[in-house]
Image 1: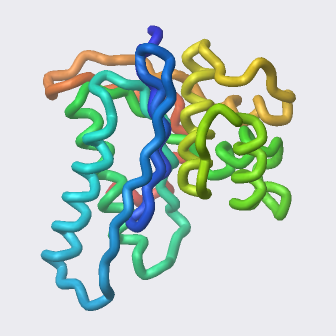
Image 2 (image 1 turned 60 degrees about the horizontal axis):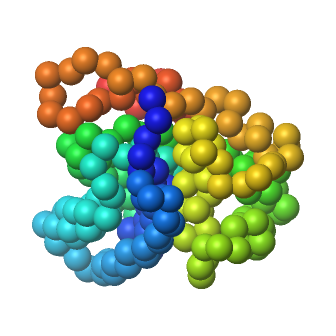
Length: 208
């Protein structure tokens, strides 16, 4: 299956990056900002997540292929719970729009951008610098947009329409465990994908 629109999303509670290649081949990017306070009530935090997910997915065309950064199961920050809620809210709203979703890990993002899956040569600023250099046709003004563009580029290559003329094999190794999803029958609204491309399964007990 070939997708007409492809989207990369770097989800964040404060600054989400979105990169979109539309059906005419034009590339758009969006930055969605949001702020919260430590004194916010549970209801306020839930409402913020709901609004943010609606705004993010509102930029995504229906029936798109979406590459989104996968959850960080090892995160222990105080905002980890809210970030997880945002991720799943985005996920469910994308499914409701008929989108197919391929989560990609931070290591895969770093490898596609820099050729390395971690370390000082694959940090945020290195990813930003390499992305600006490789995609001069896109206005990339921060780490969030750089990450989103890398996810978009991964999606375009999986779709057989790469943004780059060529890439070193060290970068292409990021795709080794990624694949386009296979659509399976469902009684739920929209199209639900069998996510063969998920490379960061939940740890044992995480889904209990």
